[in-house]
Length: 604
Image (tube, rainbow, N blue to C red; front, side):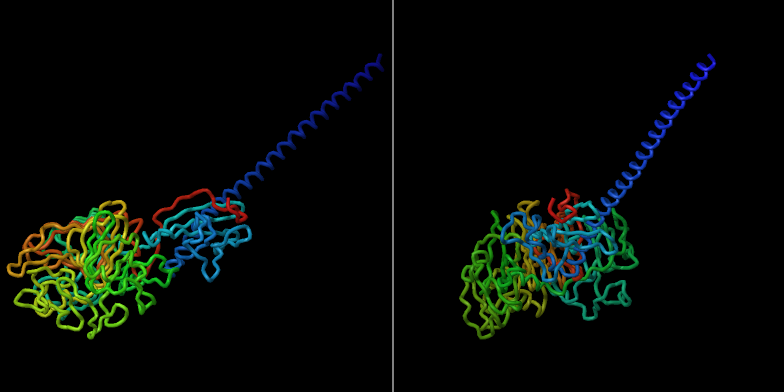
């Protein structure tokens, strides 16, 4: 009995030991599983952290690509023509006439495919990028599209950005100097330039005693958009509805005594660096060359001497340019003439008496002075120019190529009261007194006389001398049409007065829709100080000038200002519109899209 009891006790202990072992093994297994799970979780988190870091870094690399490209085109503006023509973004149709080409110096950011290179982000171990360029709209709007892809590890991200030059049309009103132009005659009757005027910004040493006439913003002026002056502004009770900046390092403005404070809806003027003007607009003449298809794939039109342009309905314009012999040139100096674009620009025979043409959409019209030599030249012995209805000013009669005065009436030596394109008008008061009247409407000058309603797209009209806006200048479609006016010298609001009484020959009020730039001089109203109240001068667009130009004065005479910014200029520009000497590019639109490339370089 005792033996049996001992046996059962031993068996029970064995069973309990077995149960304990099973329990230990079970608990150990659970612990092992927990450790494995925890390890997997930690490793997974580490991988996720790495992926997240690479994901964010890839976006940073894409931004770095945009910055790198911006630096390239700022240093070398012509770089916008480069890209990879094999890119599906640069050449989406796969045509043989892609708008981009590879540069002579290899840029790894343009490479494609698995075997292609990537550009590396400086200072990083693995961050790299590529970009693709679409410049199809650059000539028309000044905008280049960039698709930039950043890659880090196994992550890629892509951004599409629109880049546009920062420049004069970023402002409704831009002025280099706030003084009146000391060299331009014709602003008003009896207003000769001051011989003691020194061209210097007022905020610079000696600027306060420069001896020039500073033009002020008056109490009836309203500037409805951004404004910048490289100078110190003189303001009396005007209203500014936009950001106002000045090149004066101290900021602020000057106010004449007795004037009320102006209204600034976005704050008083603050400092912003000066923006340098280009020396001339001659680079626009290069846009009429036919011998450089890579740089000028679509040549514009070149006209010579006084030229009138009237925009008509249906995308048409009427052009009269009697001195023109060739409407295009070949060679950097224009040594060779070319009429191969006569269907677009007109033939010399048509232009002598006027012809109706299609507006050269998204292109340039340049009007040059009549040279003494070259394909469009007319020397003092040239007698080949045919007669024109109303009288032809032949170069063989130098005196006839000026206007003589008879009392206060402007005539020419052939007995006609107007030049070859109809300006000045009969009975028009000379815009300047004295001998200056002989040269105000020189019949060899590259002057444009322009008016009408533009339709059909965008065009930039440039003149080697003056631009005269002879009537309302508007758009048929405010969303589609866009006009640039670039005078190498002044851009005038034509305001003729009757010689016998000093009364206006045109009605009151004037509207101008355009981006206006006077490279070397001013935007101003002719005879602004006579003729009484002329109403309101409405400009919807942008105005940039080297010197301030008057549009009216107390009395009242001339016009009140109503200037309104064309908001489209934040994103686009008239075709080939001039930019400052120092050019930078800003991103005005960007959006992240699906990655264009896989990490191995192949298209996704």
